[in-house]
Length: 155
View 1: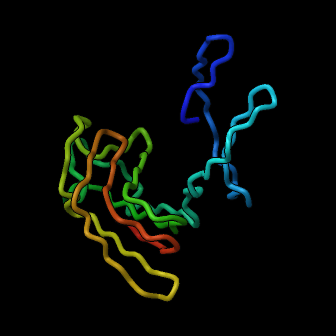
View 2: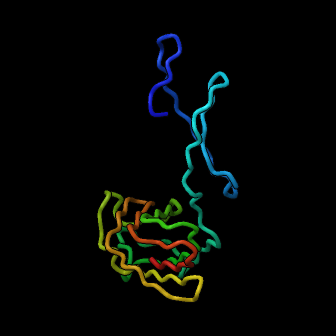
View 3: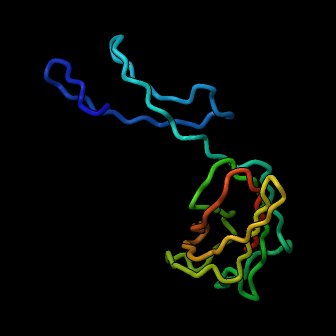
């Protein structure tokens, strides 16, 4: 992995696409085998997934055009989930009729959003939402999520 494997003076480049398994494998490693030669095992990253995901619309209506997340004309959405690993970015994809701002890639201070987490020992946390990046139907929320905490996000 650290140096190219040359076969007959030719260096090969490749690309692969993977899909996460439904559950994390007991042996979570990667290897590469070529003509019965194998690389050393490389530890894989923990499987990042959310459990118990829920979404509740505050009203059965579309967000008004040009409304801003958290504004008085914004249709509120509550998202619930349990994080399985620590994370620093939460990305939400909305349905095509729902937008997070003007669609011009604006950074916002996450005004009007609320996030609460409850840990495995019933300890609560209210992470600070410092930066969000809204672009049409996608919003990135930069936050410190803790593993095994159940979160409620309202936006």
